[in-house]
Amino acid sequence: MANVVVLGAGVAGHTAAAFLRKWLGREHQVTVVSPKPDYNWLPSNIWVGLGLRTPQSVLVPLKPVYDRVGIVFKQARAVTLFPEGDAAMPSPHVEIEYTAGDKNQQRELVPYDFLINATGPKLKFDATEGLGPEHFTNSVCTADHAFHAAQAFLRDVEAMKHGEQRRFVVGSGHGTCTCQGASLEYVVNLEAELRRHGVRDKAQVIYLSNEYELGDFGMGGAHIRKGGYITPTSIFTASLFAERGIEWILQAHVEKIEKTQISYITLEGEHRTLDYDFAMLLPPFSGVGLKAINASGEDISAALFAPNGFMRVDADYAAKPYEQWQAADWPKTYQSPAYANIFAAGIAFAPPHAISQPHFTKDGLPIFATAPRTGMPSATIGKIIAESIRDQIAANGHALRTASMAKMGAACVASTGTGLTMGSAAAMTVCPIVPDYQTYPEYGRDLRYTMGEIGLAGHWIKVMLHYLFLYKARLLPGWTLIPE
Ligand SMILES: Cc1cc2nc3c(=O)[nH]c(=O)nc-3n(C[C@H](O)[C@H](O)[C@H](O)COP(=O)(O)OP(=O)(O)OC[C@H]3O[C@@H](n4cnc5c(N)ncnc54)[C@H](O)[C@@H]3O)c2cc1C
Image (cartoon, rainbow, N blue to C red):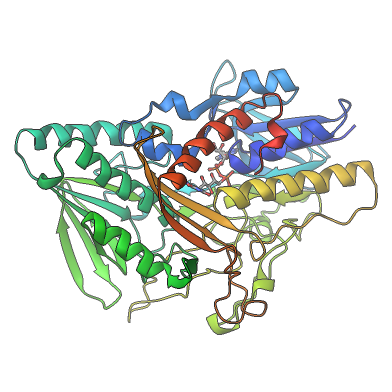
């Protein structure tokens, strides 16, 4: 019997656990450890954050799903890995701390034969003074954050209906943020909602970002093929914003947020301030802070994790100048080089370096978008790790499965509205996510699969994805037919 433990029940972890349960015989155990009771389909938080959907509509309670399919669920957070075991338990195990129920705050040792770290990001609101829902700004990173963002947004809409003016600022709350696709989606939705509420003339909408150019998205931007033209995403995004009257401030590192004022420094080293009424600014991410201890009781966290807390896998982490970065630096199997039975999926794995070119102020302060690990790659990585573990348990001699972000594509669908007739979306696909200038010397990407469209069709895709992925998350009949 093999014991597979998955840490995290987000896009990567939930996918990995579901496939493992489907593929492994009942003599093998699959356990998921995750601190929250629900799976959250994060892309639809954008709609929750404007009052267009309820938090419940983007959440799937995990326990009933896992009970039905035979996955053991522990509502707990992983704290420390013991990959060699220790005196308390000689086999590899992970120490967890329950976050709910009778065992709340109790610790437990969970043994494993294989471990998948899919713990996603720590939301580092504390990196910027005044950032986050506990201080002055809103977030859509969790369904609960998004719900509170919607309440604040709707209060401002009411005030505008009574003649008041408002300034909305959406974007990055720090110079090293990633996930700009989510900010872009939120800002275009917010602008559309202001129009729908009939208060657009009372509002100024500003996109504030650490990106070097519009449309960078932490992927160094892209060139998209549309109607026979090849257009940089900077132009595509600029025209999207210009049409909607959304202003933008780029190359900004937010230093401090007060009740009505954002202070930021630009790449040029200028300190500026921006007054605001409503702000939705994403935090920078790090790993969730797992530790690792060896059999002698020594802290080996540095061997398993990069300094940013994400887990080292089979990437080339040698420090190199930007000009020498290659697609081949990116991991393929997501196996830990330190322990062959440990893998990391989704945001939890440490990228070898950024994808966008790094930029620093003259004093060395980094201001550029860091590498995203979006939904599609996170789920795909979760799935191929599950396949690799299945093969190893079956001892069928199959090599580890691979899925490099320098081969995979990603999609960003910034869609407004939730119905079937009233929406419009700016949909972009990029392939591969990490540019590969050896295979595609001109643009680094395969322009057959790097596209952009604006219109109702993209919006239908977004609505369809909402229902399909929530159906899939419930592991209902036929869920495997829905692709990652
Ligand atoms: C608002 C928003 C909109 C987005 N829109 C899109 C989109 O349109 N398209 C797209 O491709 N991507 C989108 N993304 C990105 C996408 O959601 C992420 O890439 C994806 O969720 C990453 O999956 P993950 O499993 O690595 O992390 P997550 O989905 O964040 O899951 C991490 C899991 O680990 C758990 N966890 C945390 N700490 C611990 C611990 N100590 N022990 C155990 N478990 C732990 C968490 O509770 C969670 O269950 C969006 C993100 C946001 C925030």
